[in-house]
Length: 210
Image (cartoon, rainbow, N blue to C red; front, side, top):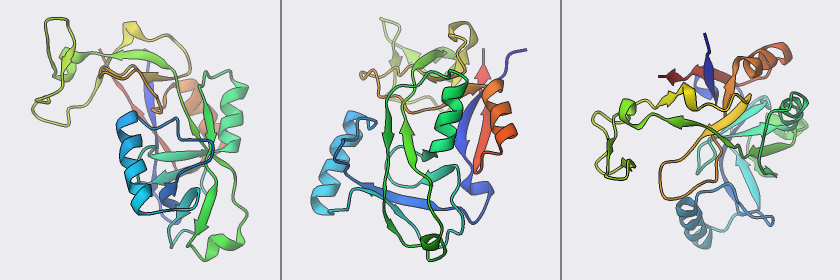
């Protein structure tokens, strides 16, 4: 039986790990942001100038492998050792953008060397089953997103027969923009790698497959 997962940060289940409240614009750009979100962030940064890189909130005591983020996308940043581990098994990845640390407001963490963190862009490898998820379709078979399914949020259900059988992938967007993709869906192989290497502040949520 095939089991696939969504990889998430686990700050809600653990305590003491660093948390990023947001980030300032990067000189290299933020290609990982959806165009709509990019426009919102550009307006925010114009009114609220920030140093390039992320701001670490007070209270954290340890640097995790998956660092939760409460600002715009992404929902977490991934440390260098995880990036290298995924590369070692040939997990397909798109662009990888380093996210520097601009400010640390956690006193304990100021004295602890921080790993390098990154945003991993992934590659579509599975399709959402629109009807099973609750979307109505238009004449071209595309999802009608307004109004959204009722109740909402409706858990996404994925077509197993559309999976490309890679170890790391994203679901293909069904909106007008094809990317960027930063969701991290994966196989049991990645979950086993995480358990073997002791990745911290991460959880694997099984996907609903049809």
